[in-house]
Structures are given as structure tokens and as C-alpha cells.
Image 1 (cartoon, rainbow, N blue to C red):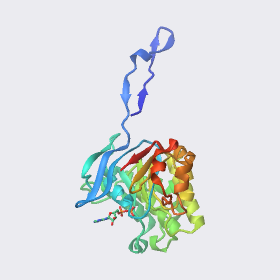
Image 2: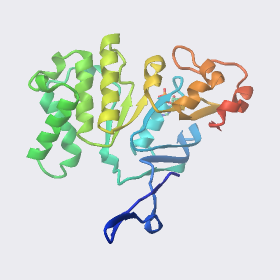
Image 3: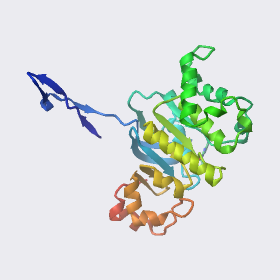
Image 4: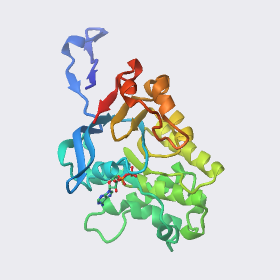
Length: 284
Ligand code: ADP
């Protein structure tokens, strides 16, 4: 658990004196902390005893083969699925409805008959409470988020007439209306061409680095996504990895476990689990 020591400067006569002895030791809660979480459908356990934390400013990529439990974990982080055991703790006053979520794209969403501004603004609905209209502040939030995603010029365009990459930007701007803190992105570049994918990754980097937005992203696109993130959670039925990207990348055994799709593909996972570099592995 990280701690912050507040350095308070007090006026003492003419000089500013660091008064470290007066400093309080403040515990900073992770934005999200999974503590020994087990997720299951009925009695079918999908993820067992999973622990990790996401701190403010992190960019976490969640990878793993199909069926490894990525979407189930996402539902749990969104508060849509309760853990069978363990707990998911949200820190820093993060409310469940303050998590911006970009679901996987479906054909129906692509055909949504509304203007870009209307789609982005609808992301403010969660914070509207009983009000049947949007406030001026909410409209400004929508405009600000459109600016962050470079889609201001598309304000009055019809959403369904946009390219796939533009639609994803609109949906991220919409997700941002729910939050200034945390974005959950589920396969955001699926279906996009390499140029549009690259542009979207750049924008996600920019949101993370320049605007301090914490990002959690499910991806199969490991080659493009992993070099950008700060942390990796690699779900696998026997062993999982959670740690900093550098630790993952320096671990040759871990690197060898990834094929082009990001799936573990190495036989002999017992040695893998005991490899010096792999001490972050958590055993299921
Ligand atoms: P991923 O997103 O990594 O592909 P999922 O979280 O979708 O994995 O699924 C993990 C496992 O949970 C799979 O075996 C899947 O069949 C099962 N599963 C997913 N959703 C449900 C559900 N609603 N009811 C029962 N089993 C489910």
C-alpha cells in the first residue's frame, strides 16, 4: 500500500521551515483494488483469488485468451457482477457511476440515428438524477470532451455516417462524460484499420498522460497496446501475471508465452511459475 508523506511548510519567523515532524502519514487508497476476488457463474468459477490494484494515472492492459474471464472481470469492476468471494474496493471517492465505459462495438450501436453531440451528451445521463433536461454545465462537459477527442468539428454530424474510428472517439468522449477519473475500454480498436487504430491509441495515451485519466483496457492487440501501458494483468487458467510492464517485458519466459494473439503458448508452466523474473505471478 503506497503512502504519501505530506511536507508542510510553516512560517517560522522570517524563514519557511519544513515541518516534516508535523506531517501526517496519509494512506492513499488505490482507485480500484481487487482483494482475493473469485468470480463465478452459478458454481462455475471463472477467476479465483485474483488480487491487483489500479492507482490513479495507471494504464492497465488486461490480456488473456478467449474465455479467460476478461469480460467477467470488467463486469465486476463496473459493479454489475458481485464477487463470489473477496472484494472490490473503490477508492478516492470513486462512485460506481463515475466509471466511463466503452463496451465492445455492436452493429446496432454503429447505426445509432443521432448527432455526435447528442451521443456524447447522453453520457451525462447518469449524473442527471431526476432532471429531464441537460444542464448548461453538462453541455459544456460534452463539448470539452469532444475537444479532448478532436471531434468538435463533427458536432452536428450524424453518428451512423461516421467512420469506425470516428465513432469510437465519439463513444470515448461519451464515456468521459461519466468520469474525469477512470475509463474502462473493452477492445477499443476491434474492426478498425491500422491507421485508425494508431490514432485511437494516440488519443488514449493523450487522455492518460495529459489529462491524468486512469485507463483499464481489455485487448487482444498486444503488439500495439502493451508498449503503451504501465501495467499488465495477464489472465490465464493456471497462472496469472499482474505487475508493471517493465517486469513483464524483462521476463523472457513471460515474453515467450505470448503468441501474436497474446495467448499463453508455452509448455511447462511449472518452470515458468518459478522463474526468477516471474515473482509477480499469482497462482490460481
Ligand atoms: P473473455 O472475456 O476473456 O473471453 P468471459 O469473461 O466472457 O471471457 O468468459 C469467461 C467464462 O465465463 C467462459 O467460460 C464463458 O463461457 C463463461 N461465461 C461468460 N458469461 C457467462 C454467463 N452469462 N453465464 C455463464 N457463463 C458465462
